[in-house]
Length: 226
Image (cartoon, rainbow, N blue to C red):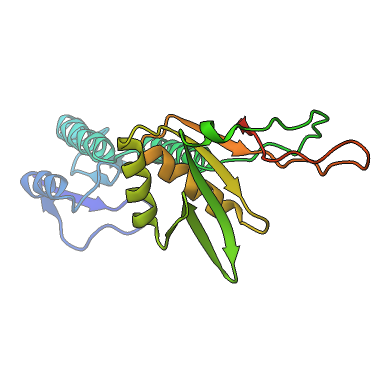
C-alpha cells in the first residue's frame, strides 16, 4: 500500500509515495515525526501518524523510547550546587580557624596600673637562687644579659638558661630596660619557657627616697608576673 506523507505544518506532501515499511523505518530513524500527517488511498483527509490506525502502535513505541532517552539524559546531569555550598562552608571555617590560631599566639601585656605600695627589698642572699635576665637596648640592637653573661643570639640565650636550670635555679627575674620592644619581651619569655623555668618574676622599680624620710630602697624586690 502506498501512502502520501507531509511534514507537520507543511501544505505540500513529499514528492514520492511511500510504502508502509518506509514510513515505519523513517519513524525509527527519526526522519519522520509522529506528528507528521499521512493519507492513504482510502483516506479522505490527512491524519497524524500517531492517530492513524496503521501507525498508532508504532508511534506509541517510538514516543516511549524518546521519553526514556530524555529521562536518562536528565539523570546524567550532576547538580553542583550542594558541592559548592559545602566548599564555601569549609572555606569560611578554615579562614576563621586560621585567624583564631594567629590571635592566640599574640601575648598582650597588662595595662599599667598605679601601685601605691613601696617595693620590697630583696635580701642579697636570696638573689643567688634566681636567674637574673636583663633585656636592654644597645643602640639599634637588643641585648640579653643572663647573670652578667651577654647572649648574642637566641641559641646562646637558650643554652645559658638551660645550664642555670640544670644547676637548680628554676626561677627567673626578668628586668626590662627602657625602650625594649614587645617582641624582645615575648622572646625572653618564650626562651625561659623552653629552658623549663618554672616561675618568671618581673623586677619592680623602686621609688626614689623623699627628703627627710631616710635613704631610698637599696634594691628592688621582684613582683610575680601577671
